[in-house]
Each structure stands twice: as C-alpha cells, then as structure tokens.
Image 1 (cartoon, helix red, strand yellow):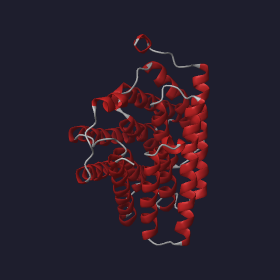
Image 2 (cartoon, one colour):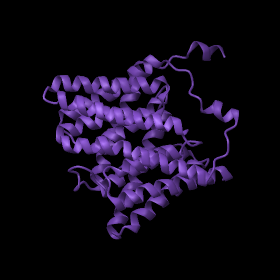
Image 3 (cartoon, one colour):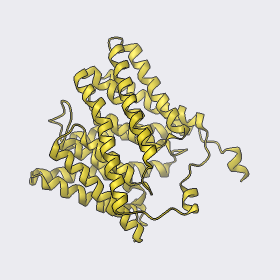
Image 4 (spheres, helix red, strand yellow):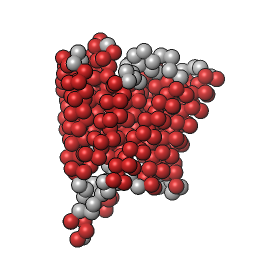
Length: 338
C-alpha cells in the first residue's frame, strides 16, 4: 500500500473513532450523524477549505431553521405538507447537481426529510435536531481538519484533479431521475407514519451517492448492493460483539477496527474495494444507531435496523435501475466530440 494510502486510512480511523467515541461518552443527540460526516470529510483527498466549511455550516443552520418553521406551520395540512416535502427534495437535488457536492446535498436532504418527519412526532425533539445537525457538522469539520493537519495529505497532481472532476451529464435528467426515485419513497414513508429517522438519513446519503453516477447499470447496482450488504453484515457482527462485551471500550475498538479494515479494503485492488466507502457509512448508521439511538427508538435492535436500511437500499437502487431502463443516459455533445 502506498504511503499516502496508509495516511488516508489512519486519518479515517482516528477521526471517525474519535467522533464516534465522544458521541457515545457525552451522549449528544444523533452523534452517529457526526461520525458519518467525519467519514465523508476524511474520504476526500484534501481538507475542505475553511471558507467553504464556514459557508456550509451557516447554510446548515439556516436550512434546518427554515425547514422547522415551514414544517411546523403546515403540519396540520397534510396535502400541503407533503407537497412542500416533495419540493424540498427536488430543490435539494437541483442544488446538489448545480455543483454543491455530495455532503451539502446530504444536508439539504436532511432538512427536507428528517426535520419534517420529526415535527410530526414532536416539535421539541425537532428543535433538538435543528440544533444538533449543524453542531455535528461543526464537530466533524473540526476533527477532520485536525486530522489533515496532524497527518498531512500529499498535494493532488493535475491528472488526479482532472480525474476527480465531474463528467459531463444531462443535469435536467439527473434531477428528474433522482426525484422520481426519492419523492415516492418519502411520500410513502410519511403517509405510513414511519419514524425511523436514521433510515431517512441513510436514504439521503444513498441518494446522493447514486446521484453522482450518471447511469445505474447492473455493475454499479451490484456494487452498491454489495456495499450495503457488507455494511449490514459488519454491523450485525459488531452489535453481537457489543452484546457479549457491553463495556464502553468495545464500540470504540470495534469502530477503529472497522475503519482500519474497510479503509484498507478501499485502497486495495480487490473487487470489493469500490464498496468499502459506502460500507463504512452503512455500518456506522446501522450499528451506531442501534447502540446510540435517538427519539423513541431506544428499543430498536441491530437486526431491525438492518432490515429497515436494507429495505430502503433495495427500493432506492432498484428504482434507479428501472428509471435508467426507461430513460437512459445520453452522451453529451462535448464528450462525444472529444
């Protein structure tokens, strides 16, 4: 393994484990979200610039507050409420496709999905979420920046920057495609009265990961399903180990071992390497949500969370395949001439 890859894996393991451990020890709400944010920050080749992070933090505060305000006002009117949720999802995708990136898109979807869902359950708990989502983001940004300072990354070469650049795509098709998949799921989730907040967070994350792919071919679908199945399997193992040894040090060591193992897998040349990043976030959501739940989910066990997340993953991935089958990606003029 290259030295830079070793540094990247070490940054990931130390940063994510640090946030995950402090979240468990201090018991702040939705600490697992902070751990996932940290994983997303640390999977990038370089630290997010301070100015960009400041804008992202302010955006998250404003978005959560506006979402809470609108949800509270229109909660008594179900039809209008669901229309606003659908509009929020579409606007989140539009903003993400315009160049905002995966993490800002995830935060926008959290505001469109999680806050309205929790307002229907309890406005007091929704206010807690309005405060703690930005705080989790702030803490994740601080820890990830610290990791890049302590373990510096090598500067990217022009070739690497070009490879990381987003390819040409039909932005209109991508927004409609994502909306056709996510809006029906969200409407069904709200109408059924479901309250599994971390499932909504998972759907927001998965939708953004799939949104970065112009088309969902069978190879991509297989890789994404493999990633989520791998993450689910690892989370069940971690949960069972936690049951056997229910002490604070157990989840800390498990999180560190998880990040080291899956991080190294992601830097390897084996076929499962592409699934490692998604497997990390899936495991954090399923396992972390089972041992450090939020709201009224204190009795949710790992196997229940796995079934919830797996069902959501299968629906979203299959829906993307169906949409791509009937509305395939067209090559752009510029890319075809190049």
